[in-house]
Amino acid sequence: MRCRPERKNPNAREQFMNSFIIVNARILTLAGENAPRRNEFLADLGIIENGFLSVQDGVIEQIAQGLPDEDFINNHPEVPVVDANGRVLMPSFVDCHTHTCWAGSRLEEFEMGVRGVPYLDILAQGGGIMSTVHAVREASQEDLCFNVLGRLGLMASQGTTTVEIKSGYGLTTESELKMLRSIHDASQDVPQLIVGTFLGAHAIDPDQENFVDIVIHETLPAIVQEFPGITCDAYCEKGAWSVEETTKLFKKAIELDCPIRAHLDQFNPLGMLSHAVELGAKSVDHLEHSTDEELKLLAKSDTIAVLLPASGFCLNDAYPRGRFIADIGCPIAIATNYNPGSAPSPSMPFTISLACRRLGLTPAEAIIASTFNAACVLNLQDKVGSLEVGKQADLQLLDCEDERELAWHVASGGPLLVSIKGEIVHLLTDGDMELEDEE
Image 1 (cartoon, rainbow, N blue to C red):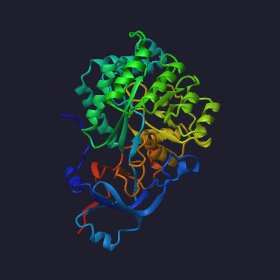
Image 2 (image 1 turned 180 degrees about the horizontal axis):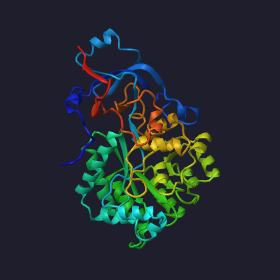
Image 3 (image 1 turned 30 degrees about the vertical axis):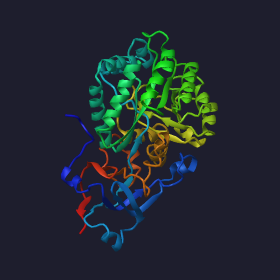
């Protein structure tokens, strides 16, 4: 039996039927300009105190302060009502950088890392990414899909309802296609919004001659033929793709009408950031060792900085300078980087905590970075990432009255309620949260 996003208290959940009203909530709307937030707007949560939000047929119908008036109530007979009793209601998370599709185990390498072996040394010994590559090549499309479904369930229970998932553990044309097909299959079996990304340039396969040319001239065109307009990503780092190789790939991707994104400066500042900005990359991700000069260039562009603090936490305690990046005016998103090696965590709340404790972001900035700005990375800001009339009802009700608890808590238990297009995929009736039918 396949795992799906967690559905607790199914009888209560079925009362909602894609339409409900939440009252007495502290609502973080994140309403504002429909573009990546930066500078002072990176912390503007658009708060409505003691507000209500109504959902009709999976879409946000109304948001306002106070309680619904009598006419509104009369026009919504038998719609269930949740009394939030002052709790925080906010957009659900958009995880815009993950590697959720994989097979095999990296536990041996985990222990090597605990014993002090550097990650790049593990890579050089055939571990790291290549270890997972071999496991993915041996796995069936059905097995990969099954694995993805289970992980998506964990993510939904933590409030994540939109997930980007990269390929990149195949490194052959057929295996990369297999991964993207399994990601697509999983997307058809869950309510979450899933976005696939092509990351054929995740590593250099030492067993394939002319590997870079194969990816650029064979694999990428084959991927685009089956998945037109898919985003093309690359991992530019010593021992992986060089600046020159990454630039060639991106120029080919642009020729094929593919948006581009890049993993940059995780361990070494190679100078690819300025090239990525010049080429119009949608995002540049990691940035642990980016230079001041290139970051200031980034701040003058529309490219979004995607920061991945769980990698530093799990690998080497090296983190991007989030406070500096925000202060110079870069739009920032944060993501889990969920993967079997350097960031085995599906939790956006944990990522928010790290973003505040290690990167220097404020809780408000981290919330916008994990919702609206993350949606902008995926070009989904018209659908998700904020609570506004006409958007799909992707939202979560937290078990707290102050959103700063998201950052203060470490490894918390997750939200009380999670909705995707008005479908309740996670529900914990607890304490004084009341669930009732209107009469």
